Length: 246
Length: 224
Image (cartoon, rainbow over all chains, first blue to last red; front, side, top):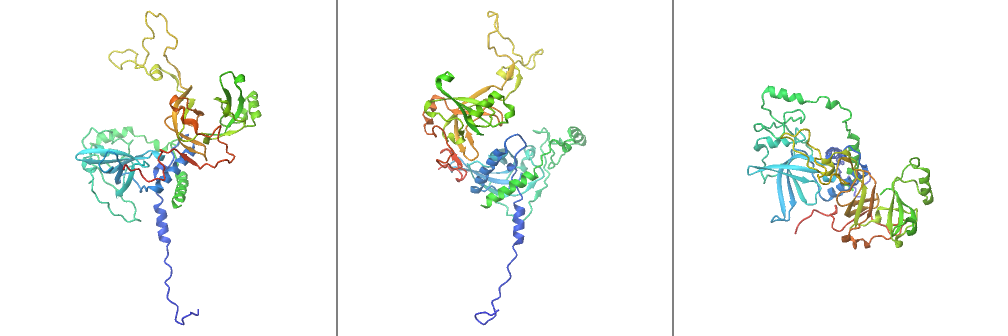
């Protein structure tokens, strides 16, 4: 090539490959909030489609972070009776319920030796901010047994600082085995119906064997109860990604 | 709102009653499930056979030509509405569930009496009055819930969002009417009169909201 100056052309480094980032981005978006999946029933799918549109609109304005049961969150809601007109509550997420716009999550914390649980709606207009303090998964979907566990497992400092986390790391699974208060409990957590893996049972052997009497091993083979959500999830994920990129 | 069409116009003298009546049909249904005599009414209007036909009492200045389709945009947000539908059928039910009787205590020597009606009349009457609350078939009758506010209307999919609960199971046919309650007499003066025509007079946006409702495009609510 003949250059205008007569000098050799300026060295231009080759373009950096951008492939790696896109792959990790795609894997990040693999997470689909469980309230988008419509439950099995006889209602018109049009209703769920319209609810999803509303949810997407709300998410565009107010970002709802990635979410698992067992995560420590701080939620600020608007309150007309508080002095600052806003209330901040820190807690561990015990369960997520509801589908569509009425999706809720319950946060639990022990404040001054009194256990407090508050149920928030994800899409409520009163919520002003959700901050993630600690991102981790637990072994179960439902942490209701924390009510019967020793209070040290549910206490979290109100002014806790958010734990920094790399963007492309996998979500750590906390395999903590929780110690319980002496029986009686609110529910019989040792029964196989609840299928809890995160408790360290200190009961005698014969009691554990007696609890296995209530096991229903045929449930996992029951075909009428199967609800395969993979295809529905794919469709909804595509919809979501298209809408959020607009 | 699924395929509503006006079927026939009955004048005051024909129908008997104080005002003129308009017959309106609901959801489309296959012609095999309707009798031949019913087919005639639909043929006159030039409309596919409908599952449900209802009458509306209408004043003379609000008459509509048979065959016009009716849309959800006929109602506007902020209006008040009465909704009529057949309640969920519960079958033959006892007196405790049907009428809310208290029944009898569970223990303390009761012999085979826990959910029975008990006494049905007095000694002096020596008869049982008509209309006595007794067990029987419950549900599957028409009931109306009055004074429901319309919050939002979706013109694209023809959906009306209404305040509170509505009788009937999911996907059941429902009759929606302007409210009869005296407190809401003045509110229903603004809407499209006689009805909303989709021929292209005015272009409505896809979603119509009431003023007080929270739009999802706004930021979160704060109390100043």
